[in-house]
Image (cartoon, rainbow, N blue to C red; front, side, top):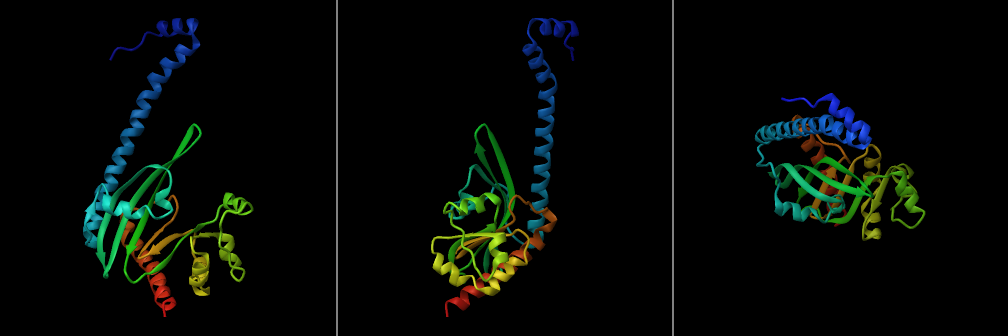
Length: 242
């Protein structure tokens, strides 16, 4: 490979400092960006193959590029209504214990002015006619949520559970039904958890931790944790319908 003559760079510097900066950027930045892109793709490809093996171990069909039909159904959730460049990958989707189950990687991008940020996380989905849940989204409360609350941004709080009210943002269309559904036992459960997010409506429920992706060898543990949460909401739905 022919190297650029240093004398040529000096001439560029004398003529225009910006030109030298551009040349250096192309010489150094270009290969560096290519290397970053290459290793990122290699890492994601390895993750996909590991999830393929995990899907075989738990006996669920594997869809490396997701499932458009399920993706459409997910649009009702707050998480899947945000941002752009939405993409599902590494999806395990089938039936377990008589319940529709999906585990997936989800990514989306939120733009802000001249900058944008891409979020990646793992999500577990449940579909069951035994749910019958009010439409709601419960997720960790941030400072900007608290500020927004002063200006009317909805946050359903419970005076008898201040720890829940401080830690979680709870929103939904039917506040009275949500208040009735979230009994003391359910609120106490949330208070014992670390930054979990649960969204639901009708016969669907999702669980995730914002910005966190599980490792491929954590699939079984994620399923177990997800079914624990699913079971609590299923049982609460059954009790509230009596």
